[in-house]
Length: 413
Image (spheres, rainbow, N blue to C red):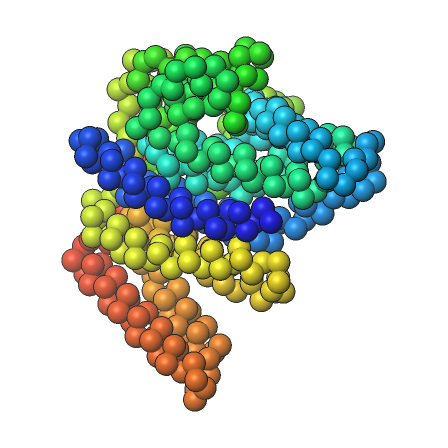
């Protein structure tokens, strides 16, 4: 049920992103950059593909806790499991979310969601592969309180769906609703790196936990989005591991037990590093830009991303019925595409041969799946021709110097 909710929400997500883009342009505002939006979408695709294999493990773990550790049993049809789940998911999400900003081991996972320097509905889709694994221990108390697995999972999915709409700059403050609900204004504060906004407004649906536990901040000055040390990349695969590498790099500068302690310390704790930037520095910080190859390349990247969305939709729909082993190959192709297209957006030299190899492998895989002279031969032929056309497009761009040129910003990142 939860995976079906997310799967069928995907088309609505895309429609609402298109609406936001249209409204923003009508208002003369630029809230989207294609390379950044593709990176956001790529992170979401990667997370959902990983959950095709991981979701069953997480649900099985929760179900085991519920079966063996539940202290309360509710009669069939009782509304209490839903009431407990609504409040429980919201307050325990707050606890997990706050811990994810205060402990490096958890921040290394959650930072993926904050890396974008834009703020729009696409950012809501920018999720970390391991988020479900870090949040499950925080949700475990609901199993002991008798919340059935289906109720728990459904409420988590509904909480996730609610949080989609609050990722926008186009909705202002909402009056009295701001006192109780998490709103776009509150969540803009959460995504900002302004010193006064750091580590504030952790709520999911309700903002009351932030008000009660002293982590609330009102939106006042213009938010600047991202993380305190910009990632400087549009590669969704690198996004998933970049903060792990950053924390490990900080640890190598330390001595003794501090090399281990850093994983349990706050992201702000870095005895060997510089202080956090002040408000003036944050406001003056330019956004990371795609390589000079960007315009032609981003169209190519957009074309490659289109089938990824469809593939992810199908994987989510069939994950409960198809054997996991049969889903491995399409999942690997999705991740390969994310890696190479992300490399192209960053202007990496290795990305052109990696993308050519992916196109060849894709055509070969379809040909092997539909051997001649079966009725699917036409599909194999069409895929081969499409792969050849994409390869020609890519090579033509490379010869013009539009692709495969690694910019200074990417090398430094």
